[in-house]
Length: 503
Image (cartoon, one colour):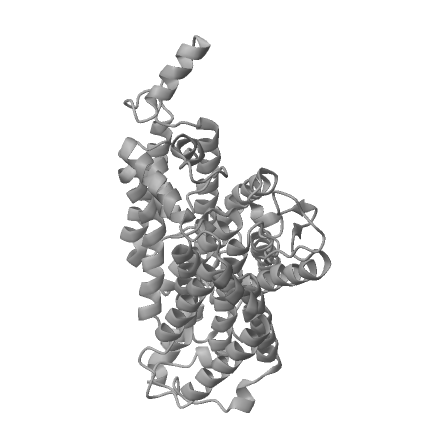
């Protein structure tokens, strides 16, 4: 058994018996360059939520350019010694993903072409020609400039996925991605608390969130660095899953235990409660408080589902063998009770004070009418606002540029066929993460499980809101899907190094 485990460890780390790694100055220089590239990638990714959730052009456009530039050295192997190489087991699913994404891009570009047949917006072009005397030739895309912006965001998400897939083959890098998510969430929630005290949460920087009259005594829902509280709650929930994953993680020595050797051994609580885990518990309390202060019902529900999914997947096959399961449950219950007593009032008040619970349903009804007018070609990426303007219900006076349901909005903009391609691009990596959560060994399972559960929060939340359309959230989800994909196929952490004979 020991001999078999030693061989597996040598294969995992690229080390052979009887030799020692050649770690002269070129090795240290390469490791420094790799660490700098990885650190810069994580830094930009986790600070994306700071400039108003990156949903303003001045925020997400430079971020997209930065990720595009960073993709070049990562593709050349910097930050990951194996670059973009493909393991045999992932060849077919990766090919399927690439084909779906390429078909999605081609369809979106075709919508902007005069080669496409007439769609539901053709009468708009005809009417414009009657009024102005001349107009652009009819195309399915009703707002070509917005379509190009949406394409750039989609390409940026794809690059982030590929970079994370390459960088997070190393389990240490994958763990650092979780740490970065926690730190980013703490930063966003801490800023939200500061604005709650100073401006009653009605400002994000100098941006006033209230559209109409504002009184200094007025109170708003906490939204951190985001413009709306729902996206903030979704981001805080993602950080909650990340910190719980770190709490479930094992020390490196325990994680590298050979198969069948003490993987299920119980750890005394006093030994488990290290200084690092105390800090993680403190971060968990802060994040849960921010989540409840946001009063986002959907964000809270999606977070609960994500945490339950993570717990079930992590405890799969361990219910009877883990004597500490009861204490984990009671500790979690105590944390939820404490935070709920402190911050749960805002959530309860929102349940009680909902002014018009059917407004979103009417928006969806108008969206389905737009789909019926152009079911196959859609209205073009970014065209929902124009389509909704035409079909806006008389009972809703306020303009609306979002469907408050990402799947519905995608179907409005891309039609049924194009929407299926877009859904496949998101769901295929998510399923691969689940594959890793079900197949990886116990000590390493938490990474794929965390990627699946963390991505579940915005994916579920976006069915009744637009969290995935916030670039900061979309970028982070892309990175975690890439990390989950890399970990699902169980690559070794490090490629073989240069070796010299031991003396």
